[in-house]
Each structure stands twice: as C-alpha cells, then as structure tokens.
Length: 81
Image (cartoon, rainbow, N blue to C red; front, side):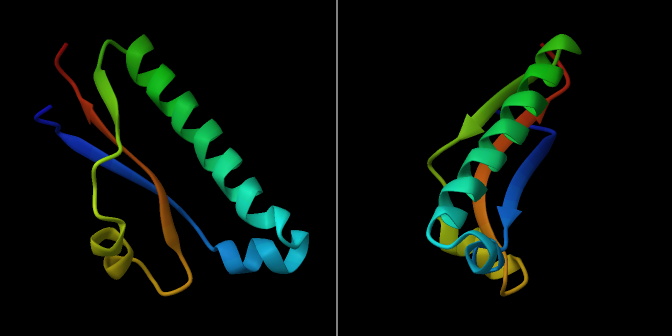
C-alpha cells in the first residue's frame, strides 16, 4: 500500500508497569489496540484505505522516539479508495 500517512501508537510501558505491575504491559497493548481499531474504523467510514502494518522493524521506529516510549502498533492510511 502506497500510503499518504502512517501512524505509530507508542507507550511508556515502564510508567504503566510502575502503576499496574506486570499487567501494565498488557494494558498498554490493549489500549493501543483499541485506539488503532477506532482509527482504522474511522478511516473506513471516511472512505479511506487503511491497513495495520506488522512487518516493520520496531528498533528503527523506537530509535526515533524518546527513550521512554516504545512503538506498539503501526498502521497506514491513504485517502483514495
């Protein structure tokens, strides 16, 4: 897919684990999944193409983020359908 826009949903997993313990990691994944699902659904309603991306190298994305945040979900959106 040749996308006009790519989203990365990231989280400070350590901060979440400080508050929720070992469940913090799971909560980060659940929240990121809910956000991505809603954004992909909205893109569909607006007539845009969208697709989750599972084949990225996380370390490349994470190196561009601040140290605390780690990429959890990636997806692309293209205006034309």
